[in-house]
Length: 268
View 1: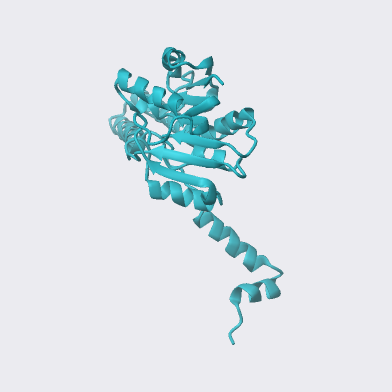
View 2: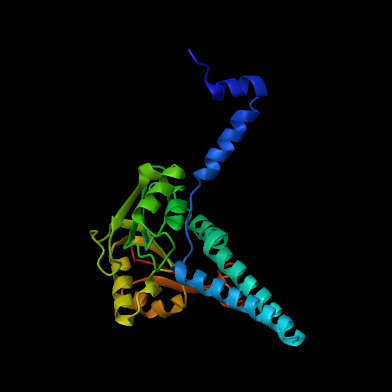
């Protein structure tokens, strides 16, 4: 019988081979949440950087040092914008939502809905706080909203993060949610409502979010200018409607440009 190379590695190298194998396995199978805004934003940043690099090269060939310095300075600025953009859509978003979910003080038995869940960053963070509860993600999974956006990607991330047994994924439009009224204790949404271009249609999505909340349920929406939603939520019967400007983690490449959190509660 052939020896198991994994066990043999542990026996003859003091566990180093096993640890290396495990590290590589985890790196190949870590959750990937994509980039908000789809591929268009990445293309624009790459195009701008390439154009400025070409401009700097042209200025050097034409012995125009001032134009070359200007192009190089702008190229550095574009790199800064790109760094901020990728941070906000990745670690920044996860950090903001960790704080928001911690502030909710979930007991673990709640039913949570994430509207526009994408590849599951916020959904999975909520599911990690549940024991007997469930986290449901609803989306239509468009690539223009997030890179690699698909239900399969969200399911794969839930499996990698070991929460798939308490996560449900539903293909659903935010304006027509296939859930009974009062189905969820908490409704969350991150940069999803603003993807609906028409104001009346956005209002319809917000009313749906309130409808599926249970009495006493909590609503948390992070979006670009989420303050626009306050009047709709109040008209839908919500109380404790509060708007808060989020910090630098949501700049998305533009210093001083902050996303907004709007929180509300459905009357008990």
